[in-house]
Length: 525
Image 1 (cartoon, rainbow, N blue to C red):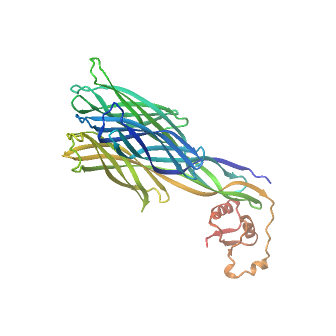
Image 2 (cartoon, rainbow, N blue to C red):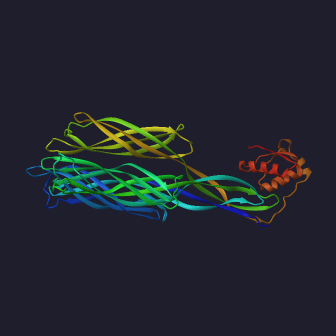
Image 3 (cartoon, rainbow, N blue to C red):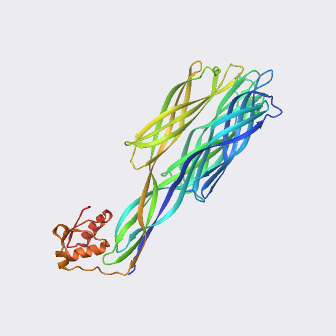
């Protein structure tokens, strides 16, 4: 006897590794001959750029370039502020036995901390702590049995959240602007900072359009003082993403990887024009939800159906919750800090520390790392930076206690007010996106065949009569379902069966469909 098996493919995308890893890199910086000696380091900053991410069996190798900017007070008569730009290579090896070759990998690297050691007036040792955020996904197609013709089957519906499209691209922006009237000419650009604001994504016909603004602050030295200038550059970049649609769950990110500013002269010959160039890394990930109805158990009356089972695990992002946490906090600088003249930039980065479900609620907590970069009237510290952490905590209803929440935070906006000397009130909002992930384990049939059928042994009426009265209505035997049903139909009219729970629903349905004369009443013992 031959059977016809129908199969369906289910695309499965499982997160095999989600981790954050800190590592350090160290480099020596020699002051160029054109620069004066170092008296005091005023400010440090660094920007990482990932150039290689290689996924191998059991490990991921991340490497790139780290660019430093050092503001320092010169050891000369003028005690002027100078800057040095230097770069070094970094590499990080992350090991995890669940990682396989050619798995889909997304990685981000951020600076957690920077320290400096002044060896002498001409040499510095810089040590940076970098945070690697790694996500590795295993994608595969499962061929599952969706139906077996001629067999009574029990089915279940599996849902799988899969990454169906993704793309990553670099983009360059160039712009120039002239200083406003009343500003002195630029003698030297000391530092350039930038960050992305007001970005948004639009999806049209296998294309992802990301647009937004880059806000730039340039710190420079004029003839008599330190000054700064600010501007905004808009961008719009189109990524070719085969298979992306607007009805999918689309995730995107824009990261600034490099920026440069040079001085040029205007038509009157004044050095008050700043030409900007910056590089962006844009990423788009499109997710869709697939479903498949597959057979988990089956039998054929009067037939020997042999089924091969397999245990599978399916991951599905059941829902995405969007939440916002607002903060408002006063930051009072210690007495050891120089007085604030003017704040020329605030940098804020939110981090999620914990995300868990308790009593039907999802609890998210973390902190926003805030840097105040300001100019001061203090001759010994004309430029200064102060770091503070602002805690945040928020909660939302959980859609299910069996879901695993994974949260990410992004800064929406930030502003400040100087209330008193060295007292700043910070206000801002953090957008928090929580992915509620369901992991489903199921034992499914992946193959079936017909073996040689042997009719069950038919006990006599005498054998049945010899059963004790309290056991007459209960049958517990380690036999295939088809043999049990056959036995019951031959000898009994009304019975009560104790049998594994997974068989009850389709046995009852099958008895009704065939119009059997026996009434089957099920219960679990």
